[in-house]
Length: 378
Length: 96
Image (cartoon, rainbow over all chains, first blue to last red; front, side):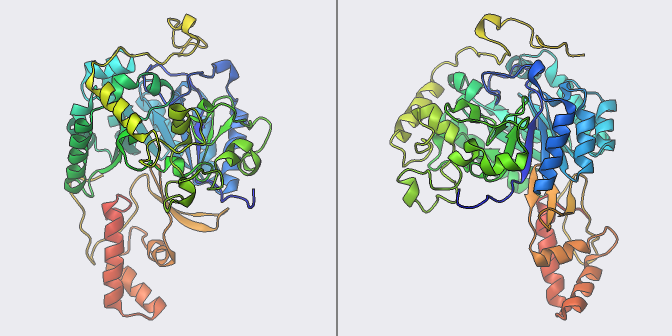
């Protein structure tokens, strides 16, 4: 390290990996943390205080399903007290209006509700949770009733991509400020299920047209964030705003990660907030320093005029597709395996979608155990 | 957000909608606009404008104050301020 990095902008607090849904594209790692290993309330409060003291602006309470934790109220209240802007990233299926209202009273600003589809039957099949879609619609309306900002998060792939127009209409009907049309990104569970999810190039370009048109038509009414699968891109996405540049992710057990998928990269050593302060970790943790900045970059990244724009793309994707996290992100057309990756995706997209491998806590032998094997829901 | 696009003029009274906070970050000594999973870092001029967006002042009043404070022609200020605030409104960071 030659100099201390600027403070990060936001803390992604993955307060639990427990979740009643089993989405086969879940962004959590394949090895999920159990309830018994989760940080306690006091530790999370300390982490949140440290985040504010470092100058972070926002905290995102995420998971798993963050509302599984009964101390979420305490954490929201504390984050507000120390001056952080609080976001709740939820499936919405475990909360009622009274709890939402309590969150709002304690200072929560914004709720993001994820949807699996606009049609209940397909949505519930993808999420592996019967009745989920109906509950999500109901809770999204209640987010409005209690006066909170609402984002609809639509995870889009070949099994629902035809409904992007409906997602847009649904978001307007629900009076959301914002819609995220997020194409599945292929790490962890989603990579296992890639052939079931990856859209064709034609599906992707049709969707882009729909989104572009809606952005103009709904200017000032609905903001639409659009994330494309970068398998079909020419240049990689600016993943996490650059490794160790913008965000800190703390997992349920207290491990501080440069991104939520970082544990998929072998050989990185993650420091825990149980042992060190957030600011110490930000400045000193080897995992954060490994791919921070540009010094680690191979050629042609090193000579690329975009190296401080996309910061080399995504390390987890580089590892997943090339076996070395230090390689060029294959999403970049300069990567020697870019064409091969593109070709593979096209092939998968044009063959019949395989069955899902659903997200479960526990090893394969325990795959049929209840989702809440560690602790009953309520 | 809204049923239709908001178009600002000098009689509009700009304010921050639910979920949007204009706030001073003490640790960074920096004014920021915080919104759902978003962050804006307004420049010094924008900060001066936004400090006057209190939900009671019209764009006309705000422009008058700034013209006086910075000894600048009010017509220019009014047009710049309206344009800046319209851009924020279009992105969902402002209501009126």
